[in-house]
Length: 633
Image (cartoon, rainbow, N blue to C red):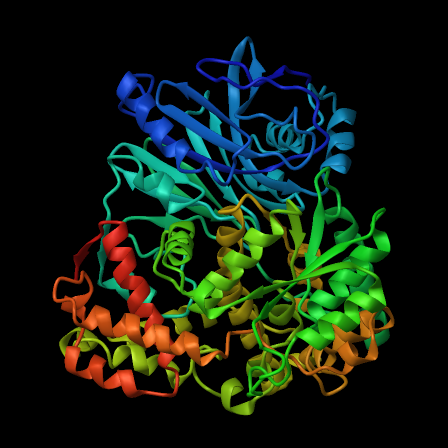
C-alpha cells in the first residue's frame, strides 16, 4: 500500500520538510478538459488567480499544472514554518496519481495517521495535508465520502485524480472555510474566495435579479453567491467535476439522534466534548488568543482554553470610545460588555487587552474599502464589518490564531428569537423582522415589485423546512418541540454560515486564523439531537452550556442575560452615515442610482429607527463600482 508522496512535480515549485500539522491558506484552480493549461497564457491566469489569495497565505505559494488541471495555493504558516508546502501529490509508478490543495485544520490527523500507517502507508511529512491525501487514497477511491467522513476539522480542499481525470471540491460540515466554484463551458474555476475566480478571464462580473435578492436578504444560500454563475460548495458536500458533468453529493447532514440521555448526563457529555475540542484547537506554534465578550460562550471558551493551555492565555475584547459610560440599553443589548469582560479576565487570569475604537475609525474610507475587498460581496453587517476588521488588525500584531465563540448561540439556543413566541410562531426565518423595510423603501417601486423579496424569502424558507430531520421518540408528539427543531435547523444552516463567512473573511484578510470550537461536528450532532426541553431546562437561554461550564466562570457572567455583538452608540457615527448617504443621493452617476427611488430615499434621511440599514445601499454602491459589476435586472 505504500506509495511516494511528493510536492515537487511538473511545474510545481514546492518541496517538503517536516511539519507537525497544517496551516491556513487560500486555494484556487482551473480545470479545462479541452485545453492544455500548461500554455503561457493559462499559466499567467493561474498566477493571477493565486495572487489574489496572497493575504490569506502571505508566507508561501505553490502551483501545479498538468494538461487540463491547474491548481494554486497560498500559505499562512501556523505550525512548523519550514514544512507543509503545497500542492502535494501522491505518486504511483512515478506519476502524480492524486494532487491536493488544502486549507484548514484536521484536528484528528494524529489518530488517522496511526490508522493509515497500520494499513501500510509511509509518510514523507508529518503534516495533516498528507494525512488527508492518503485518507483519500486508502478510503476514498470508490466513494470519497468515506474518506472525508473520517476528518474532524475545518477545511476546504480540491483533489485532482489524474487517472480518473476528475476533480473533487470538498468543504467541511458546517461551512467554516469557504469554497466557491464557477462552471465553464469545458470545466470549472474554483477558489477560496470569489476574487480568485474573478481573476480568470472566463468569469463574468455580473449580478442579476437573484443576486440582488440575495444581497438584500439576510439568509444564507450557497446556490446564490450574488455573482451570476458562481456557486458555493455547500457545507457537508462534495462537488465532483468530470468532462461529462458537475455533480453535488452530501457526505454529512444534521439528523435526529434519538437522544435519550437525561439532563445531568447531557451536561456532562457537553463538557467532555468541549474539553476535547478546545484541547485539540489549542495546538499552534504561533501566538494564540481568545476573543472575549464577557458573554457565556466566549467566557466558557476562554476559561477552558486557560485551563488546558501550557501558557497564560491572551484575550482581546472590542470596545468603543465612551461606550460603557454612556451605554443605552436595548432589547438586543441589555448590558455593555466591558464590566463582564474584566470580571472574566480577572477570574480566569488571562493576559487581557481591550481594543477601543472610535466613530472616525469605523467610517474611515480605507477601512471600509478593505472590508469590502475582504468579502468580495455586498453582504454588509454595517459597522460590524469595520469593527471586526479593526479588532482583528489590532490582534494580528500580537497573535496569529484566535479562538472564537461562533456557533454557540445557534446550537444551544442563545438568541432572543429562540425564546420570544412572536419569533418562534412566525411563519418565516426567526431572525427576519420589519427593519429591512427601510432598505426596500429606498428602492424603485417597480424594482421592488419585480424582486418580490417576500416571495423570495418564503421560497427559501419552505426549501429549508423541507430539509429538517423529523423528531423521533416521545418528543415528536409535541408541536413546540417540533417547531424548536425547525428553528434550530434554520439557525444552523441558514444563519450560522453567514456568521462563519463573515468571521473567516475579515480574519483571513489580515492573516489571522480564527478557530471555532463550538462548531466541532461531534458537539453539533449531540446538542442538535437533544430535545428543546433540555436545552432550556432552567428556563433560560443556553441552559446546557451554562450548566456545563458554570464552575469555570464568575457569577456575574453565569447570571448575565444574552447581549448581542456590540454596535457603536456614538451619534457621530450616524451623522457621518447620513452625510455619506446624502452625498450618494446627489450623485446622478452613482452605479446604484438606477435601483433607487430618490424621493423616498431622501425622505429616509430624517428617519430615526433602523436608519443604519441604509449601509446596505452604500455597500452595494461601493461593490458595483469597485468590482465593475454589470447589472442585468
